[in-house]
Figure 1 (tube, rainbow, N blue to C red):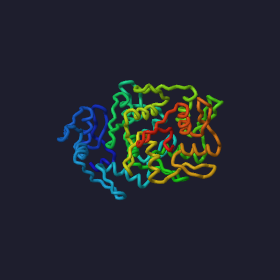
Figure 2: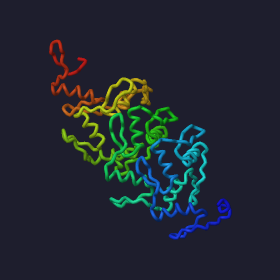
Figure 3: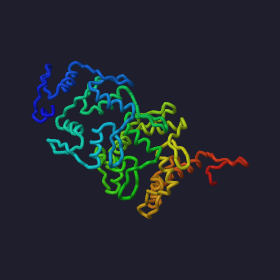
Length: 365
């Protein structure tokens, strides 16, 4: 038999398809692809296999056995094939090359997927809407849009997700992990996309401009911010609160608003346990522990923990008074000052002395 591997002699031929083999055993295994025979059965789950070897490999999914160990990092694998692929993450070896563009890959499966970007082949089809996909994983994710299945669950808050990567990112809202760091200022982020957007604040790149409204001409770091901004011109508010009927232009704003009715506070500080209804409020609160003040006044250099505080502070330099009283026309630099002023018209005195019952329009009065 060994001589045949050297001479290339294949005396055993399949009567169904004509494929030839050097060993009778190989022909026997091949014939099962035509007959459908699967004589080897897993005693744990009942799954059946063409080969005894395939069943042996499958059994490791039940026993957890991983006999193949990486000498570099100690990670273990159930199959030698997986170990060989893993080793390329250490060596950087990429033995598979695309003949179209020359791009190298460490895995044959990755090359196969890449080739479809050239050929346009989409072999995986959704049986519900017949949409086709180049990858089976993409089809699996797409099917969840029909079934509504969200198999990945956060053990902290119970929120469910369709993708494991989305769950991983979500978990950082609980752990506070920020693995992506800006090399310019050291600020850290939970997502690589957020870091990319942040980097534009250093390069002063504003690639997204409101071209449809030349009178505005405002530019943005993010395309999503531009989309949101455009709605301020056309006044679309598609999302309505079923409790108070207040309308919002964005679903995320409605979601945050509903928490003012329900009292839900899903975000909590790992340092002191204080809970918040919005993730942005938690992020601002964390700075009271870290002392971080990332927002700097370009005029005097004073730093602030919140961007809103910086915006209010800058008005002390510019003299801008954007908040106007509709009763008398008096203008104010801060909305809180306008709120207090309005009480001189309405006579509202919301603050009460617990000793004598006297009421006041301001807390410090």
